[in-house]
Image (cartoon, rainbow, N blue to C red; front, top):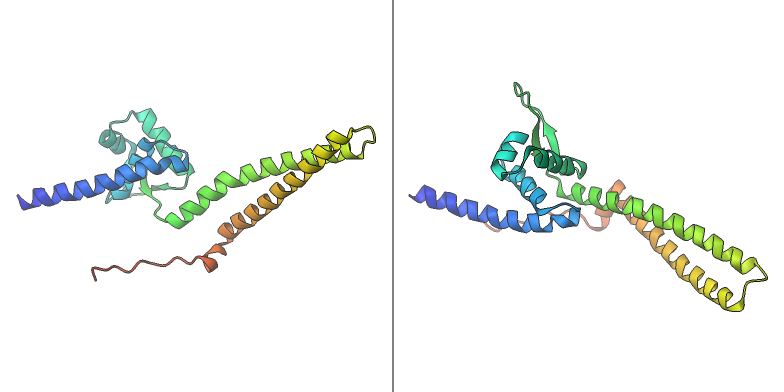
Length: 186
């Protein structure tokens, strides 16, 4: 009887974490069901196959395959190898710091590149307007304001690029070191 109560308490604790994490998986650009899959793997004491995950979560094989692919792309899970097992097995890559770095880098690098190119092209076009003696004074004034504002954006994207670089090189950890929490139960 006590064992059933303990198992129920364990499952309730895990359910709380699973619910919170699955709801916040939108930060990674994925659905809560993919978050539940991640948590299933996190709490599993062994690598799981697609079929095992599908059965546990009640998802179709196609949905499960897509969900696992999303987690692989986010570097949140990885394939595991177990001697004698032919099916693909998956486990959580349990380095939350690297996972954050990867997500931040993956999401921001393309945005910085795209936005910087658009801003630089726009500044060039606005400078051509300013160089043209036929440009009206009103357009000239607006172009000067736009150039100034766009240069501020370029400064921001330069700063953001340097921040991303500090994640890639782990230099950020000099300023914000990983500190393990002390377990108060010990």
